[in-house]
Length: 243
Image: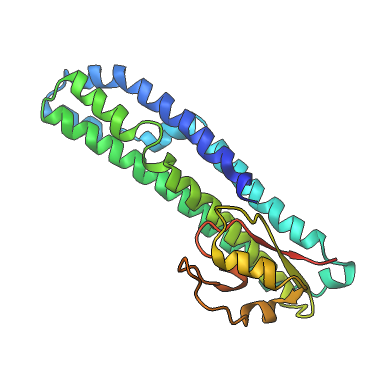
C-alpha cells in the first residue's frame, strides 16, 4: 500500500533538480536589471508553470490514476448485485475526496514555487552575489527540501492509505455484514497497538465491530484510531476484506 506513491517524490526530486539547475542563467540575467525592472519582471515569473513544463502536470495525472485504480480495486471486489446497490452519491463523494488530495499535493507545489520566486527576487533586490543566491536556492529549495522531504513523503503515503480505507468504508457501508482482517508487518517498527490487534483479533470483524474495539493505550503510547486511521500516522497496516 505505502509504496504505491513512492514514485511521486522520486519524480518530484528530478523536477526540483532541473528547475534549480535552470536558475543559474535566470539569476545572471536578472542581476543586471534595476529594482523597478526586477519588480515588473517578477510579476511575470511563474515557477509553477515552469514545473508543469518540466513534467509536474504529467506527474500529478499519474497520481490521480493511482487513486482511480484504488477506487476500481475496491469496486472490483463487489458482486454485480452489490454494485447496483452503491449509490451515485457515494461515488461522487469518493471523487470529491480524491480531488481534495490532488489539491493538497498541487497546492504544496504551488507554495514551493512561490517561495522560491520570492526568495530569489528578494536576494536580487538586496544585491547579494550570484554565488550566494544560487547557493541559497540549492540548499534551501533543492532536492530533499520542502515538497520532497522524507516527512512529506510519509504524509503523501499516509494520505493515500487513509483514502483507501475511506473508500472501503464508504463502499461497504451499504453492506455492513462485510468482514475484514488486519494485515501487515509485525516487526521492530510495529506500534504496540498494531501488534496487539494482530495477535488478539485474528478473526474477521465487521467495520462496526472494528470501530467499536476497546483497546487501551499501549506502553509506547500508541492507540487504535478506528477503521480508517488504524494505528495512527503512517500506519503500515490494512483492513483487508475477507472473501
